[in-house]
Length: 434
Image (cartoon, rainbow, N blue to C red):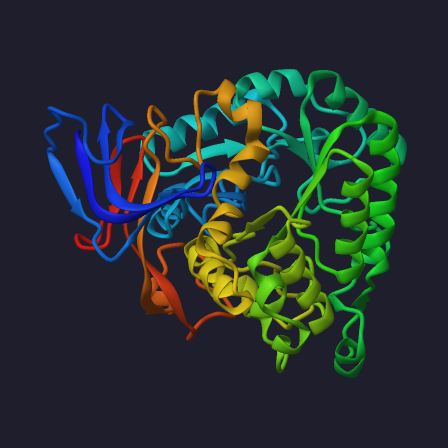
């Protein structure tokens, strides 16, 4: 279908493009930026006046809960939530049931995602079989099946010899390893260590749980030169260590979740299970460092850390509740909220959820015929049209995800998505409710 997105403010953070004009799409690709090419006849015209026409968002920390946890999030509902939030590409974590440690499971997931014609799905394969931290997976086979990297999700890898071998193996093929820096033993608590956790009688997770793991990872990266992505940095000390590692020239990148960027441990309130998150919410000084690090580029990406959790699992006492919160439909709005509060230019803010996220997928994504996060002639047409000035209220009824739990419930957030296009196909339109 030929689509003309008319009269929007076109922003492509990757190229620096920022101008008012039209975007023309034909045969799934962008054929006109600024104006349609001669002879172009649209079959569908989308009015983008007063809106921003941007690359579709790329979210690299999503749990789809399939296979294995279909009662918490079906693939169809979570991909519908993604496109309703302007997310056109996502990387899903390997901690499904069964774990994504076999090529057949990866093939099945990608096939089902393609059949739904929603957001693009890029699986992250398990680094070790069953995430048990003992035997390495067949990374080459998993990559050929469609994995863009390898990680342990939230399962710490305690055996540093296994981790070293995994990094050496990944480095020999140029694969990226995704690691959540948390010491296996210090990280067993419920809330961030501090006065609030002590007062509430909650077992604490000290900052050292993150920094000790970071020191270990950096030492191994120095010897292996493996590309490592650090998932969900949560502390000021962690940001400082990443900054030093980058200054040293280590091949590392990192992300922060929307929860850590906007919330603190105070938001636990009176044992609100919606605040039961991993990593735990930390103090204001940590949040300030994360926001500053994202603004200055030390923190590379912003992610939703989308984890749909069923009502029964959240209705338990705080320490027993399943960690996680919904986030796919909030990523754009909370990016805009941060940009406004931190006085970050809109193009820079969009960069941390578009092309910079896509760069993490890197050659792996390109090997599987995708080029997300950009608006360029000839690129696949993954586009998000949103009104940055229009506010919407976060309610369970407004969320398409099966996960309805979020501490942002009741917030008035900026950035209403009007249209989402994936591969030249209009997959979401607020006007039609589809």
